[in-house]
Length: 300
Image (cartoon, rainbow, N blue to C red; front, side, top):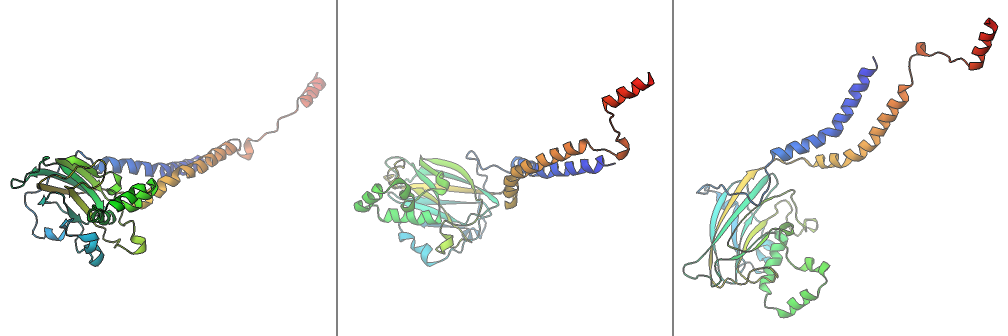
């Protein structure tokens, strides 16, 4: 009768240990994967209120990130597809400001073509970056100070580990696509917040991201030089809901292994110690060999 509860307890413990792993694998299989090979399936026309979800910026009009410092963005969280066209002039850059939020996968499709009135001498080839709000301000300031040779020399002399504090970086250090005439990539936001939200410089509840098309020599060693003319850019943004795991699942997965290392030996030890125990009726005394020999001698 005691084996039934023991089996149920062992099954419950094994289920608690294996359930998080099963949930993770099931979610990974079902959830859409952010892939650079994705395609944009965007309707031909935008919804009437689409202007509330993105805003176009020119790097020449945003002096040292002045707009972000003096007014809060009123953009809504991006939860729908849209398409737009813009013109990037020679030695300049344009950006699309958006509020990307968790729970969605964003796929960006960009196509560059030459402007018929001012065709680029080097062809319609430019650089594409995805920047967060902090790095967008650094990007703008680097454009405003691009002719300051003394400042460039000072930055070059900084230690490598300090340059990241002064130079702009693409989002997650990977979303930089340089010397391209077309580009497709996807991204998903894991959490809300910005690098400087703890000191109150930016609104961490409304993090803004900037899709930048670059037509100037921005100082990165791998970037494209100035285009030498104007480029027309077609941008398609495909927004798709994605399945995300709650935060507590990560803590469960992290704690599962050490807990298993503690519980499993205890279970094995308990079962080993209880294996030699039985009912009192099954106990019997084992006689000594000498006493048995004496008894046999007396009978003989």
